[in-house]
Amino acid sequence: MSTPGVGLTAAELKLLQALVYQECGMHFDERRTQFLQDRLQRRLKECRVDSFYSYYSLLVSHEGKDELSRLLENLTVNETSFFRNKAQMELFHKFVLEDILRRKQARRDYSLRIWSAGCSTGQEPYTLAMLVADGLGYYNLRNPLPCQTRLPKPLIPPPWRVEITASDISYSVLRTGQQGIYTEAQMSGVDYSYRLRYFDKVGDHYAVKKALKEQVHFDFHNLKTEYLPQRNDVIFCRNVMMYFDQAEQKRLIDKFYRCLNPEGHLFVGHAESLLGMTEKFQMVHRNSGTAYQRVEMRS
Image 1: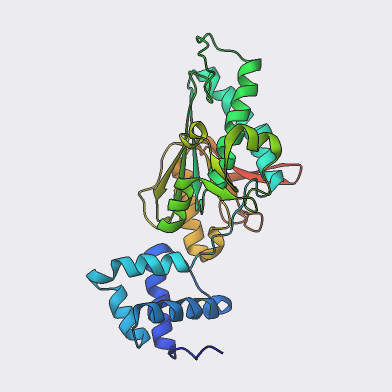
Image 2: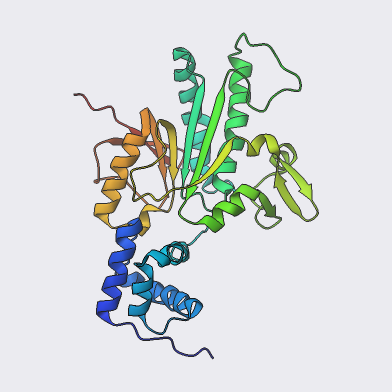
């Protein structure tokens, strides 16, 4: 049986809650206080600190910057999988992507920018890269452009350019995403044809192929800051807003609005909703898949 941890006073809890909120916007209400305490106890033990107040003093000191990053990493649950929420992925693949490509081609703008915010270990951005490569391939067959056909055929048909930014607050999950190597269990949502086209079998693992890997750029971002990827056509930020209180959620929705191109789309987790929180987005709904499209405000 494990030994009981150091006691946390209400004042210390408030201090630590305020620090976490100030740093990354995560809010721990009564229901999640126990989870916060458990994670704090772990870090205390790891740092060999004997009280929560000493730990707080470490976090706010210049030397404590790395420990603060580690604590924030420990407070997120990095649950993810390939093709997670199939109805949403279908909505993106069959309707949203098609609509964007049509509008862009009409304007002769051949760039596509997607941001996976809170990307965890990379399954979401790589899923998006596979769907974009597929979608662009089909779209190009139906709407060929007078570009020279290169051999071997590139993954992204020219003159199209795809840039997928994958960001997270945790350095360790970003490293895993960059490596792009997954176990058989992690690949359970990936069907045979996708495995064949986009992965190499290496022993009992699967490695993302170089051409697909090149479409995804992993980067550290804290959603609390203003330095976020701009001019996106689509933003995926699923099961992240649930960590924030309503005030922080509203601020984040405003940031996403500013980070999207006109008529851009935002995908949030199926348990999350923008309804009643903003008039800047309208819901798009097809076959159980939902997303939100940026509403162009009349000046």
